[in-house]
Length: 592
Image (cartoon, rainbow, N blue to C red; front, side):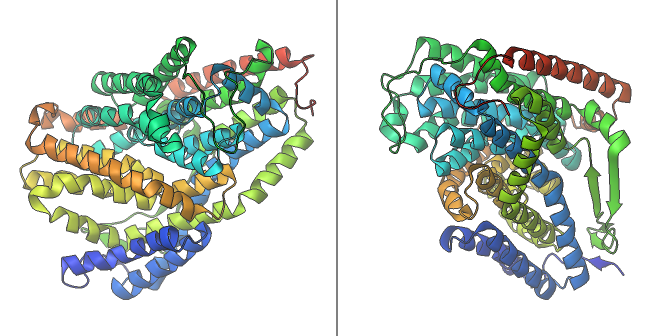
């Protein structure tokens, strides 16, 4: 028997919204005040949400439990799968001694921790976000910074902060594409609007990062490098989002940012390098202690990872892989049994064996085994150790997604969104916070657009505001919620060996998340009523056609061709890296 969602169970929208917000307030309290370990905070939050869904919203217990189970499955695959495979590559690099070469090669460019944060957390992280998304950039970059010698809390926090501006165009533009499909607003118009909002954040974030790391005085010492890093990214992000579309801004902007920053550091460097208090004083840029071949070999696994995740991000490649290895499971007893707005809600678990980003990372890890000179036995030991270390992080990620699903299926998400919509002329301001809330709960800008995209567009039309403003605000505001999402925090703690200290990272990022979201909210309000000229001109008649084109199924032969080319490149790099590594001794560890 079906159950229809009740969005106002207390017959008072403000009270119903407050009831829906109680599990969120509890999770905030558990992490920020009580500082519970992530898995206990998530488990207890799920129990609280289940109680409110069943007792407060009248949701049948069977459906509530099945919705939680559905979310937990999604947490295990594909989200936790990304974390496990990403940390495996990093751990194998450490085990074989290759990461010591990476550390020296970076220190030869700059041993200043501020510069390393710009290059790895912001620029390289943006590339990984654009190619794969879904936790990949934080998992990789946080592990790298911790390995370089960053205080683990700062390594995790800085990477979460950096993973803001790129998120809207992550995973080859999926959040923007989904926003267009759900809201009915032209996808290209949303891309342009977001591309006229986030570049302001992109310029700010690099300087923001170094100030967070080193304080105001030391942060402003390196404003030229921060400006080059963020400015080159922002300009490229604006141009690509406005003239090419939502698929390439992160990829191209990150490449431009890395190139410009590295070249700039060749001609300019801080007078005094900054390091953490626990580290010995800097003696300037380190001398490169290894040959070009050794450096190439050490970086080759991360180059392979970049190629794999970039290839996997191409829609035609994904479709090619899914054609043969995609499995869909309708959750028995839940699928189409809950009705929202007169339509049954699907509950289909998708197991994308080959097209998952984690699988791309695993393949990069497999190809990296001979490159690093590791034996299969060593690789197996590292894999087993990685799984053992991350077991509680996996529990946290899975449980948090269960929490998000029960929040959505019970109607609590709709109650809160309707309360935001009731703010009238102030709605463009609160539209950003609605997106922020959605990403906090789900850990995904794509998911928050799917949840609230239509409501954003309809509400905007009712109050006489161009819907593209509020839909873009949903997306842009959502990126600022990524850094406090329990899912993202669990990924960061897993990568920096801070499992159990999720509350500390939440406290570290919460203030910055609210500040940046407020900036986006003010911008959205000004765009809606003051700077209307910034809104892109688009035709509603072309919106459906444009969104249909974005959703069109590509030719599988194209995906197969792209995949073949990527594999040829991977094989070439693998053999070359292995060849230059033969006969060359590493300074820190023998070949295993």
